Length: 152
Image (cartoon, rainbow, N blue to C red; front, side, top):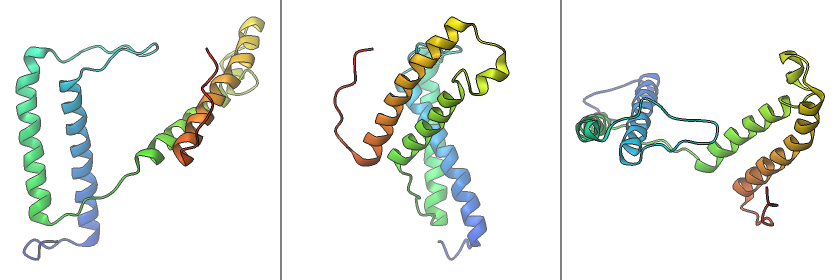
């Protein structure tokens, strides 16, 4: 902490959270400018950033990043740490809960009656997908080596 710019612990925490979130967003924008997002099977991206916009945006991102770093340095803010693995594990665990709720006997009942063929399909396929998610979680948590997944 900078003795000439004192902060209480709550003030320092608030600034850390605020600046760290902005830093993450700037880094994500920079990654998107460098490597535009690819469309996925269930997610297509729109309102893309054009190549002719990217150069000017990169300059502004870098200016904002440098300003943020200068502030953090001047205030004497220490970096926090975030676990890459735990972040993915938490996200996959939440996805696993959502998959469980998508079973015909789960929360899907609240969406209306499923056609018998759709219910049978979900009952057969959701456990396979859930197993892949559990394998990913196990690999991330322990680094276990698993057999290659069955062909899909």
